Length: 189
Image (cartoon, rainbow, N blue to C red; front, top):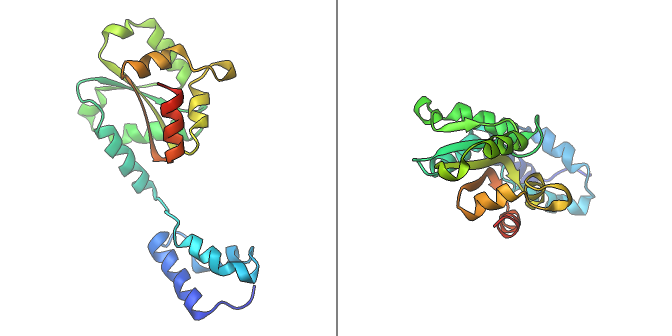
């Protein structure tokens, strides 16, 4: 890569300060630009000018906003999507930390989908006013959500389908892509 123009350098400084909240340095961006041919540097900088960078507080704010929209008169069962140690578990932990003590009384936290399904099947679930809230940080294609809520061979669990059809199932994430939302809506309804 040849020397960057003053205009590109200024754009990089703006990207670092405005888009990335100074969480990276101009040097980080320049090092990244070395991956591109000279004729592609402009396009790479344009790409960076459209990146949305979310800080932890941004993610927590989005999650709190979504949790706050859930029905107030129901116990919410918070269930992380994915295996223990993955981002769903971290999001569940963040939700616990975000909620006030009086709101926590209306929540039950489960360690996994299997843990929740076991609990759900041991209760008089149909007579309770409870809902289930599956949580994750990012939903892209929606495939991993459908897989996580399925049995073998991508057959969605009957409990999940029952909860979805009765309006007791919610899936929340800090970021949800349109095609992921469509896939989940289509496969789990």
